[in-house]
Image 1 (tube, one colour):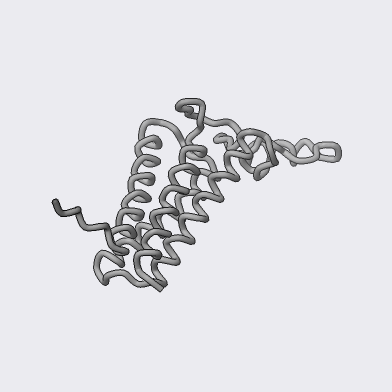
Image 2 (image 1 turned 90 degrees about the horizontal axis):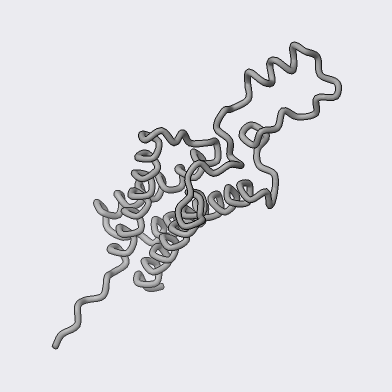
Amino acid sequence: MTRAPRPDARSWAILAAAGSAALLAGAFFFQARGYAPCELCLLQRWPHAAAVAIGLGMAVAGFRRILGLLGLLAAILATAFAIYHVGVEQAWWAGPTACSGGLGDLSAVSTDELLARIRGAQVIRCDQPSWILLGLSMAAWNAILSAVLGVAWALSLRRSGR
């Protein structure tokens, strides 16, 4: 009995990029269903978009070690941004004031300035999850899945040799 061939570096990289594409598609699906993204949600999309572009490049031109490293970096950034967002949701640390409900120090603020701050405040909050599955927010799921994609990028590099 012969064993199935092991996936090569290019296959792992394309799989990781496809995973990022799936996460982006999921984000856009939720957005179309009425779950508007917050500032941190939007930030988490950029590394996945980069990973998709890198994967498309590899699909056309073949595996390049530098692209594999950039794909791994994108996955690490996506994981880090998602963990940061989870920390904001869990109040482990403060998030950006633009999406965490703060209007700043109001002790010496004029009425006009207060109204300007209220009008400029974003409606979509980063510190309140809008969707939870099995006790985990979208940001937490993104952190987990982005870490898995990071492993796939690392496997692509390992399979490419030194």
